[in-house]
Image 1 (tube, rainbow, N blue to C red):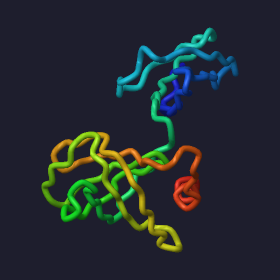
Image 2: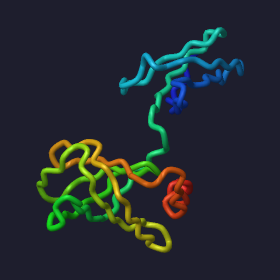
Image 3: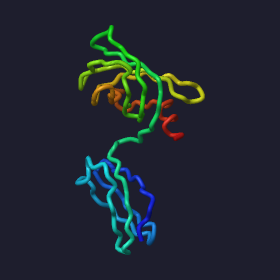
Image 4: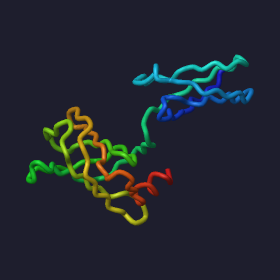
Amino acid sequence: MTETAIKKLYVDKDGKVTFICRKCGESRRESVEQYKGQTRAIKIECKCTNVREVQLEFRQSFRKETSLEGIYFRTSYSYDWGKMIVSDLSLGGCGFEKMKACTLVLGEEIRVEFVLDDHRSSTIKKKAVVWHVKERHGGCKFSDPPGSIDSELGFYLRKS
């Protein structure tokens, strides 16, 4: 029997996930490094012949889809800034849509500021490094000091 709902499984830092069969309860921990970069769901078959589709998530932290207004500042060009919409957000970084054409460069340091849609309209200000750029879409990795915790952002992501 094949289950219809596709469950998302998060891959740990060792590149492994734990599969648990919903039919018989059997569990096994396996490496899934061979599937890194694959976007399609994979089928897992249990010893009891139950087949299940799962989506593997290799990201290090949970990512929430958003639509938050914000601004980015290029730190190497103090006069260069632009409006953006934060399209997804995690503790480690964000994806965004730029409102105007801008030549952000991979590895460039930027500052981002955006307002959360929480009850306090919390303002988040972060230094970040450009992780990817494609046309108007960009992504950055926050460059917080090691061990620092952003409680407002953490609480916002937790209540998803």
